[in-house]
Length: 282
Image (cartoon, helix red, strand yellow):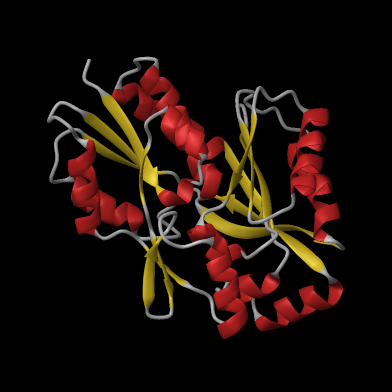
């Protein structure tokens, strides 16, 4: 059976240990601070983004890898014509990454592109599912069929502390942003059907809200036990520990992995954003 290699856009927000463990290749999206364009996860940090927004009042701009970028990336990953590549992109509703990757893939044999219909470690969960199966010797056709079933069951959401990032990014109106700030509302942003929407709104100190939000997300659900994520932008160790404790109280996951969101996700959510992400059973 030919070798299968898994790769993803940088927006999957997987940990360095996971990327190394499964030899997952990463192609960075671009983040621009004014005229300066940098690569997500390579030469820009979250603090660079916070400083830029506070200084200019503007959000960074993000951009997908170009078709040429994907061509170079696939050539590097496909070490022989028989090597099968399966690449996962951020949801096609958020970026042109999927479109560009599909165009590039047409120039190769044995390259498949999967639209994760998600972002951050929601995207990452789809990637890990494929990487585990590839390691077990499952065929590419079976992996792709599995992803068709799994992707709709991935549950991704985040609670956002600073509504101004959503406002500047055009994801809420000025009136809504003003009202949220006055009432100290912290919205839960959910990914449903590849798109972002606003779910429950919490009120108060965001660090006290996070464990409550985690409990709400797990309530009444039956999850795949093997893996769940806590993904955040610069939350304290104490806050993450409280969320982890709440999750462990409510459900026996085999593994709860903490990751820090990359620059692309940070650009749209801002500091002190935290999400609980998992796969729901059928």
